[in-house]
Image (spheres, helix red, strand yellow):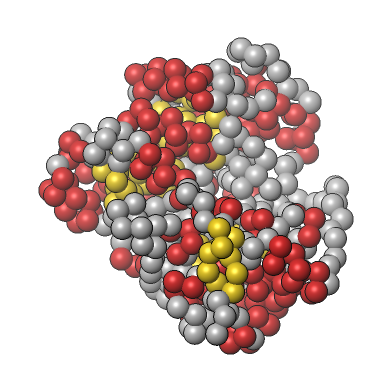
Length: 462
């Protein structure tokens, strides 16, 4: 008899463990008050299950750790740089690579090279650091993502798609010559980890070619996007993740990469491109802001780990298990009746804070309040992705009020077990049952830039 359904397990075994500190609810309540109700300001030792981010906090493999011992720490021409460069071309298609300390270093350099004051940069929903670098360089970001991306209840399979009509409307309004590039992210973070389809990316490529506009790729989660294409898009079921990743990248002109996500390292990133003139400008700027063009703020050992991590990141078994754990948590929450963003994304489960806390108006930051409450309940650290992250208008000073007011439960790669996911789900269920007791928040300290990192809050009384 053939078994139709089988349990699955992670395609790795554990060689080393890190003991976790257990805290009481009273201790966690004191800690969140001290942190100004901002989970970013909590000491990590006071956190039980850390789902703040998947950036740089994954578990490296034994091969990566072994590679760290082969680090060539030469200031110029490190052997590890050439291995990293070759891996980028082999797996991602780009001819030229400039290493940076992480993704935002690449964003800064690219923005300074391509953007002129008064430009407009369309993209499939903003990301915080990407938009800020574009704005600091003199551009205005314009969201051209499909409308379904702003509806957490929609099951549209490719919410990361670009609405070509919105792109065309922007070009008619401001002129295509004011658009230096279209910026597309694979697996759009702020939309809930939602993918772009290959068919849509080809449409964007054709539009860029017709309008003499570059196509830039935020490829931080490209392997996760490839998995969704493999599972959902006609003609890709029999293709490997590696093949799909290469095809995605090959449709674009340049890319920024935070290697701390898909590429499975604790630090590092790069700017990659096919144009030698852009490469020459990037080499000049990386010396100013990061380091020499053959290390760019990375140690040789970290470039070695990155070269190995790239190869591991496109393995089908790895990415299936990675997204599978996210789906496990998301499906468990859905069975509990918790409102989340649908479909379940590739790197995180996103809670719909407005649905969970309908009594808190958006200008009192319900997602921030919900994130704080989850920490107090079980020591689970998550993060806000709503009005606090969206920031303020430069012109009016008013808070941006995005349609999505979310709490992100982000799963580091190869770190936690399914039992940890059960603890997280049960905590969310408990907090949701006590939702009426949660109060809105107001700022007590607000930084000028990227306020979600360091802002502090206190409850709104009354």
